[in-house]
Amino acid sequence: MIRPRRSELATPASNEWMFAKSAASGADLVFLDLEDACAPAEREKSRGKAAKALRELDWGATTRAIRMNGVDTRWAHGDVIEVVTEAREALDVIIVPKVRRARDVWWVDVLLTQLEETLGLEKRIGLEVLIEETEGLENVGEIVRASDRLEAVIFGAGDFSASQGARVDTNFDPFVDYPGDLWHYARARVIVAARSAGIDAIDAPFPNYRDPDAYRTACDRAAAMGYVGKWAIHPSQVDIANAAFAPTPEEIEHARRLVAAYREAEAQGRGATALDGMLVDAAHLRHADTVARTADLLGL
Ligand code: GLV
Ligand code: MG
Image 1: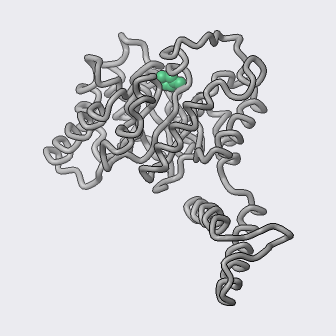
Image 2: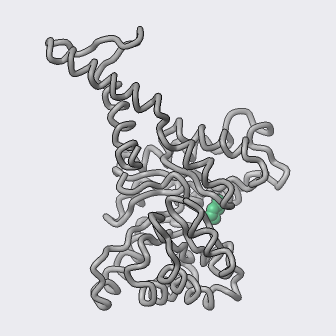
């Protein structure tokens, strides 16, 4: 985990009137979307709008990103070249959608390397990829190792459902209409692949932005699996995700006590001990370490 990603807020790159609100939303990452939230006729014009906003708005601590179009579309190279050339160091991350094979990531990586060299950029642009095609899920193990720019994988349940042929219409309620989690296999596959490559995983968008309780439940479930954040489609979802993916003061306190108890046992030549009536061994120490590192990253 190299930067916080509790909330990743999507904003259509065609809609300039939304940019200032997104920049001030408190999201860990905002991405100006040149792909599916942007009408095809607007995509080319929106590159300049995105670059200007990345350069000129006050983003505070928010990571500044764009979502480019997929590498199998006619927009892909123009998205990368125009936005990077105009935004320069004001762009932190590019999100690559509909990734199917490692070579899709490699193509963006090579283009970025050439651009960074040509433009003399001092900063290296990071990448996130969306796993939202059945083919991408099949190949996720090679995709997460395709570039050392890769910082996170996002699970995209919307396109993934379509790719799978799932019968989920707008009335589908994920907590009612299917026992368990319809996307559990995909979510589990994505987090395991991400972790095995040492990068983060971000959970899917939740379309019903008028149901904050359901969004919170979805955040909590993703956090339980090891996801570090969730997509937000509306600024009202940002605070919910930021809270759900941060360790609570009780968790931080417990983690610190656990480390102390373990170290004391270790000093006495024991590999395990107990804390509050529960076993503490090396595996628990790893959990506590994750909590502590997340807390440090978030300045908690
Ligand atoms: C996101 O792009 C999704 O398809 O869910
Ligand atoms: Mg999608």
